[in-house]
Image 1 (spheres, rainbow, N blue to C red):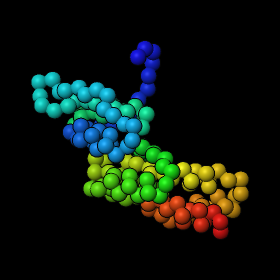
Image 2 (image 1 turned 135 degrees about the vertical axis):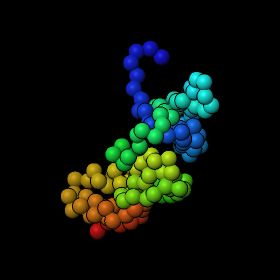
Image 3 (image 1 turned 180 degrees about the vertical axis):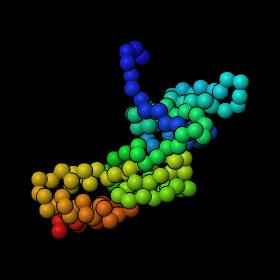
Length: 153
């Protein structure tokens, strides 16, 4: 690769390898691209990976910094089955938030978003968009059928 490139770096306290392997197994078309060992110590220092075509660096930087929900990875999915599967897998050992957000066991925040929510929110009908927004705000995991029902009024 030549020229500038861009990727997001996430800081972990020793779990970068496990997190990378977990996400690569859960997200189709994902893979670890490079792994850099710690020099003079056991384990991995950092990894370059691609999650569904987006590039990341996972750094085992130590306990100085923590991940927060101020930054999250947003995944758009087509079906409720896909939403449920990814939500349930990432939530193991993590914590559910509102509006389709969760923090997984590694401290990474995720937004699990059905594409239908985006379509429903892009309506030119303000009343429909308001109903969909209100329905979404009352949800933890997003429910496509309930969002579509809210859109219909």
